[in-house]
Image (cartoon, rainbow, N blue to C red; front, side, top):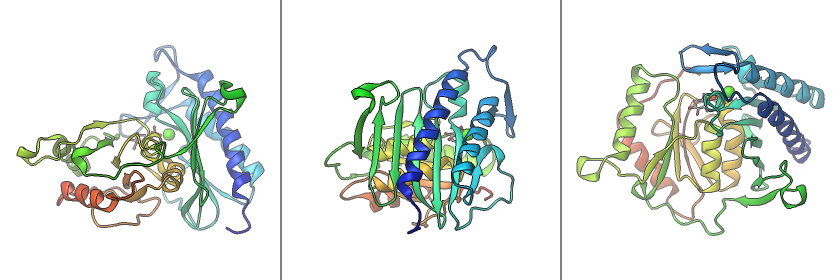
Length: 308
Ligand code: IPD
Ligand code: CA
């Protein structure tokens, strides 16, 4: 890692993200009937469009030219059995939030991560509809820049350090928290049962054994959920079923913003990048471990099972 120029990689990823963003905006299907050709991976709501594939092609060509010795794992070219190894690996989701993309709902992004030794080292997440960039380099803090492409602040955009609060307040428990969750594309079996049970328990009043969270949110993009946690706008994010390309970039951003990622199933404090079950909490002076344990208690005996 010592011989990698992470700053240069970070800057390259930002320029690729901006280029990809222009492509997504040009393709934005505002009317599904006239819009993109949709394909469904199985199961039926796991949607992929022609733009997902075209953006990944652009990204892999740019990155393999700039960094020919690095490995590349992208959602659209992934085949079962492909492993993330210790060598520097770009882990890419060309569009995270494809369902929002096809509905014209402006919560989708490109997620460009670099993992070294199977740990996130650089992360760039860019939502072109809101011209909002999140980025981080391991050990150097996390930032968000709004409006650089729109030309705000003389073309540099409005840059802020993450988390947005200068003095984040302690995490005081689930009953003081805004929690984000996702339904995912698998709507049956044990995983669906565990998720729906947990959703119910999180929301229910305490008299009925619930946690009475402030509310639940779904950004429709794992990367944007994690970035909202990094910003401190969401306190806790829990999901099972997403992949390394959904989380790699934003995991780097969240860690640099003082957040933690534990396993989405109880008991594992330091989950693998490709473990597919995650529980993330925002940066806070106290209460991080306690809220993770409180969440794991809500899960109780339930366990999500996803093939890795
Ligand atoms: C999906 C989104 C969604 C999450 C799924 C992901 P995609 O990615 O991140 O929020 O619930 O687990 O697969 O399909 O839009 O790239
Ligand atoms: Ca995707």
